[in-house]
Amino acid sequence: MLREQRAQKEIERAKLTSDLEHLINTCHTELAENIVEVCERLEKNRLTLVEQPEMQQEPQAQALSDTSDSIIDEDSDTDDYPDLDVSFWTVPEDFDLQVAKTRLEDLREKIDGLGPINMMALEELTEIEIRFDFLATQKSDIERAIADTQSAITEIKKRSREKFHDSFHAINENFKKMFVELFGGGQGEMRLIDETDILESGIEIIAQPPGKRLQNILLLSGGEKAMAALSLVLAIFKYRPSPFCLLDEVDAPLDEVNIGRFADKVVEMSSNTQFMIITHSKRTMEAAKTLYGVTMEDPGVSKLISVKLT
Image 1: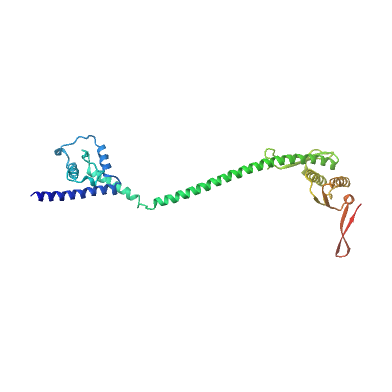
Image 2: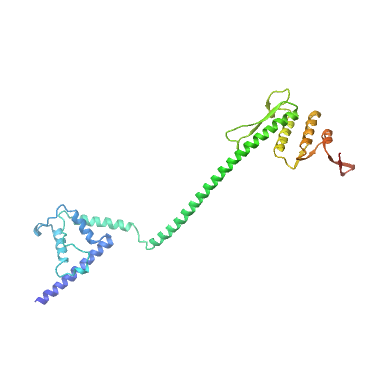
């Protein structure tokens, strides 16, 4: 008789152990929680911790209470579940099995909505972090290069403004003197159109030949424009001499008096610059030291001749 009861108890114990394992696995797989955490949360939601008599419990709560009491009995081996301690837990009075099932279905749908588990997520995260660090380094290098370039541009603009300012005022002073010498009087000068931004500003030339009022160079006659242009060219060469200067028919619009002034100025500046002038003016040729000409003694045959004047 006792053996039969013992065998029956062993069967019940095995069944309850299987049910407990099933509950633990269900909580882990479907709720991603430990059964102890579920029990603790349910216990916190109770309004009271007063244990109710078995006769006053609802059928559903009584069934769950009986199940929990029967799962952990004196004969069960609690070493199999070291983290499980539900001896204090009882079914709350307001527990609704249908509501719990509905919540379980909602949680299950949300878990399914997350999609399959990516087992390579950690490796992909590592690769992405490496890529992010590389791009962050590249971004930092580019920003540093941009900052260095902007700093260099600022320094270049600063030095350019200083050099342009010095050069402009020096050439302008030379132009004023050269204008008076070539025109035999009057006045001329250069002006910046926009003095606030000298690197982008245009330059306006104002000229006043002798006996005329001060006006823009565009309003002068052809000879006066040519003389003003020669004054500017010679003023630039006087500021920074060049080894060679080639002038092509620049004296064509000038009269004899102005050609004489131009020739005298060329002779004066020839100590620093070698002038090569293409001209038909005899007055200009008289000022030259060497003449090169093209003649055609026979029809269709050109001949180059040179003459040195002492």
